[in-house]
Length: 224
Image 1 (cartoon, rainbow, N blue to C red):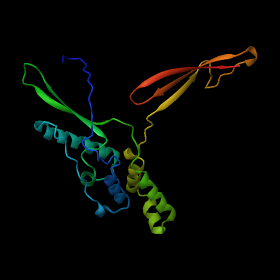
Image 2 (tube, rainbow, N blue to C red; image 1 turned 180 degrees about the vertical axis):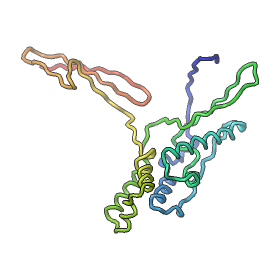
Image 3 (tube, rainbow, N blue to C red; image 1 turned 180 degrees about the horizontal axis):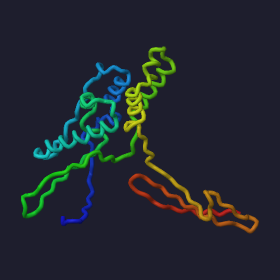
Image 4 (cartoon, rainbow, N blue to C red; image 1 turned 45 degrees about the horizontal axis):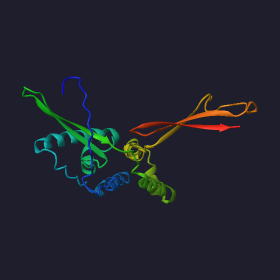
C-alpha cells in the first residue's frame, strides 16, 4: 500500500472452542467474593491458550501489548481493584473480544513491525452481573443486620467497588435492533387531517438500525 491508501477486506472469524464461557462465571464469582469482602477466597483465573495460528515471532509482542491493554482497561473500569488482584482474577483474553495483529514492511528498506488492535466486539453487549445483583438485593432484603451493614457500608472505596462491578463495564446492555418511525407532515409525531375532505394518504417511513447496517423501508396507509 502507498501512503494515504485504504484497504478493505473480509475477515472470517470462528471461535477457538465451542465451550467458551461467554458469561465469564469464574470472573463474576471472584468479583462477588471481593464485594463480600472475602479476598482470601479468590480462585485465580485460568488464562486461555493463545491461538496457535499466531506466528511465534509475534507471540511475545502480542502478549505484552494485550497485557498492557487489559490492565489499562481494568484500571479504568475497576479502579478499587489492585493490580495484583486484577491480574489474578481477570483472564488475559476476554472471550467476547477479537484481537487483530497486523504486520507491516516497507519495500526496499529494513523497516518492518507489527501492531495489534485489541477488544473489537462483534456483537451487542449483555450484562454478566445480573445474578450477582439479585444475590446482593436478596441479602439486603432478607439478611440480618450484619449482612445488611456489609453491603450498605458507605465507605468511598467500597461504594466505588460496588458501583464498578454492578453498574460498570460488565453490566452494559446493548439493544442490537432499533426501529424508528417517521410520518410526513407530523409535528412531534402527531399528524392531524380533516377526514371530512375525503380519504387521506399517509406516508409512513421506518428505519431499522443495527450496529452494523441500516435499511430504510416505507409503507403507505390509506384512511377515510
